[in-house]
Amino acid sequence: MTVTRLCFGTSTFAAGRLIPDKDSGPGIAALAAAVDAGIRMIHSNPKLQTQWAIREALSRVHEDVRIRHVVKVELPLGASEHEACELIHARLTQSAQNLGIDRVDAVTIEIDLKRTRDRALLVDVDALTAFYDFTAKQVASFGGQPTVFAYCHSPAHLDACLRTTQIGGFAAQYNPVEAWPGLYLDRIALSDRPFLAMAPLRRSLLVDTAAPTARDRLRSLRWVLGHPAVTAAVITISSSEHLLEVIDAAQHPLRLDQVRQHLEAWRHAPVPNQP
Ligand SMILES: NC(=O)c1ccc[n+]([C@@H]2O[C@H](COP(=O)([O-])OP(=O)(O)OC[C@H]3O[C@@H](n4cnc5c(N)ncnc54)[C@H](OP(=O)(O)O)[C@@H]3O)[C@@H](O)[C@H]2O)c1
Image (cartoon, rainbow, N blue to C red; front, side, top):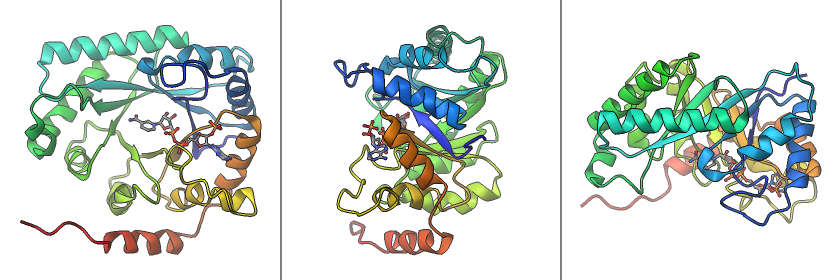
């Protein structure tokens, strides 16, 4: 069995930059169990220093299993072409080394907000389009023909990368609170490109702890997966118990009309007045 609509997120599943003193054992066991259960996609970021634990987990699974590694590359908007190329190659080389792989299968390009000096560029759709276009070409030149996903912080970013065919797919935080990408899902489906929904539980804040069953507790994940344009939900799991609950929830997505009902409410929620 391949659990195609779940991607194992690794930001906090083991000790790394975000939780240095975490007990990594349960997360590593959960990742190995996830692969055994059929999950084949893993998202990682070399800056978060948990790729060591992915390698450890994968050393425990059957060597014939083919994992699809999606790795992150962060770049400031406004970087020179030379600087951008160096950063892309450095990050991809680092991920390949950390994971012990010859090539990555997919890359998420993210604008490094902290290191973007000219904030006006963040809402300049032409500059954003040029950024995604250029960085996607550079990633492609790294070899191995990875799919290039654009990680989008905002609607302007998603709009920009819908304009360039260099971008092979889209990624964004997407859950019932950060629902704006949902307003693009029909366009994404029409463009015939994948969408990765990150943080479907909003770092666990959207786990309904009062709900009577695990399926109800994970309703936010089921809402995310209720739209067919969501290729996979990228979720962090650090225990085998959570893994089983997540797989069950993923097999029971909400109906599309339930998804649309919330998206409509979201669309009509108050926004600040125009000046
Ligand atoms: N900028 C970016 O590229 C970006 C941004 C955000 C997220 N991401 C990616 O998306 C992944 C997921 O994001 P995230 O970790 O921020 O948020 P998330 O996946 O929405 O939430 C993860 C949290 O949910 C908990 N959880 C999982 N299954 C559960 C269950 N059955 N019952 C109760 N709690 C459960 C996890 O607990 P345990 O860990 O204890 O199991 C963890 O604390 C990240 O690992 C990363 O790969 C990328």
